[in-house]
Length: 249
Image 1 (cartoon, rainbow, N blue to C red):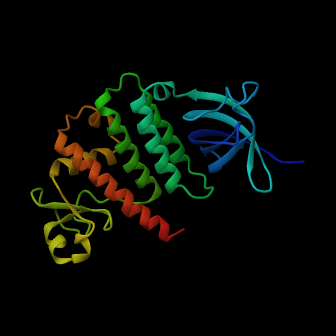
Image 2 (image 1 turned 120 degrees about the horizontal axis):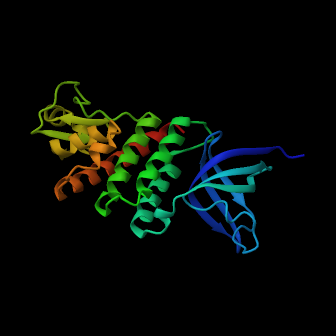
Image 3 (image 1 turned 90 degrees about the vertical axis):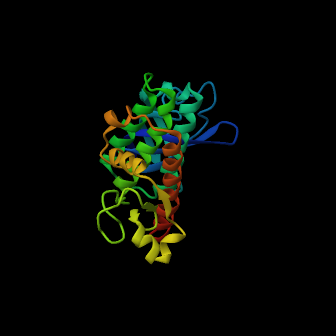
């Protein structure tokens, strides 16, 4: 007889297969990241379809077969309907799902990550969240997600020489793990392919993000230049940390 497993699962990705099947990528409280096969779930008569879908927190039961895990039962714990009903929020949530899918490998229990994921998606789901803050939730998620995985980003001192930073001449290097000073940028050519000039406003935003101080972050008035730089720095980090994660798989 097959062993039955039970867990709370946050669905961050969904792939439809064949005419009626789906595969859900989920983060569970007990088993880490899993890919769960749901047979015939898209049929109107399916008893599973009301209990699980993209951006649901669900209580699931599944069995382990020879090559895949198959869903046998699902009950909704929390439905993030504010995300699914808003195209911009859905776009941001999908980006968050892509990051989870790309960086989470294997089955490894991590309660801190599971709780943080629920927190981040709850912030995005909040009906009082202003439209111009949607992307800020993504950056809040991204940098703290990296931190939980162990990709420490240095934003308080130079990541190269460990000296104090001059706010008028600073750079960001995902390869070196954070903010670097102009001396390190000029002396070490290896930085130049990855480092980019930033300003003190972006550094201050990153510091607030990494403190998980959403109350302060959500009230910030961020100008278009800082928003652009924050986006570029974040993509810099995704590329750099993605390369690092590939090295250790």
